[in-house]
Image 1 (tube, rainbow, N blue to C red):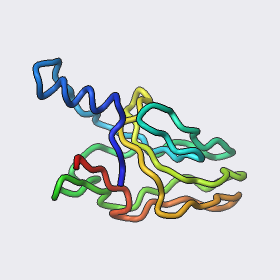
Image 2: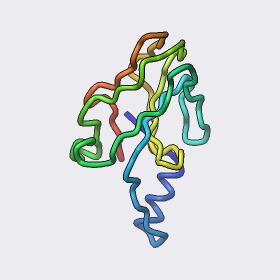
Image 3: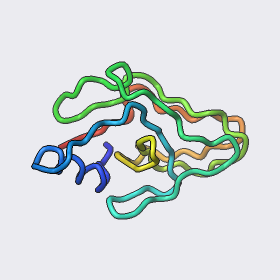
Image 4: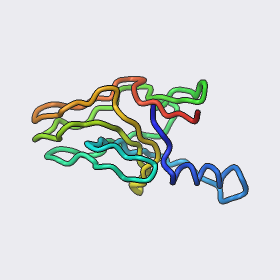
Length: 131
């Protein structure tokens, strides 16, 4: 289950409670972490040969309809094939186009990514929640 970053929590509160309007980004970037972020820390993003955040459109085709305060990815999100070790992936995050973290959450089970492997987030496995 993904948590909302402090940035996004503040933007949402401002949007609904008398502050500036918040426009959702048209494109989201999905990143992987070897140390999970928290609401007050950035975490450590994967680095390694071939690693790059994956760009996904922020549309209803990418995300399921909200239900019970949650949404999830409607199709798999696949990263490029690792050209070297990426280390042990423990968390996933969604970023806006400026690189600001919006949502983040731990993997159900950590996974070590080695050269020649492609990391995939299965359909429905990334769940963003408001509850």
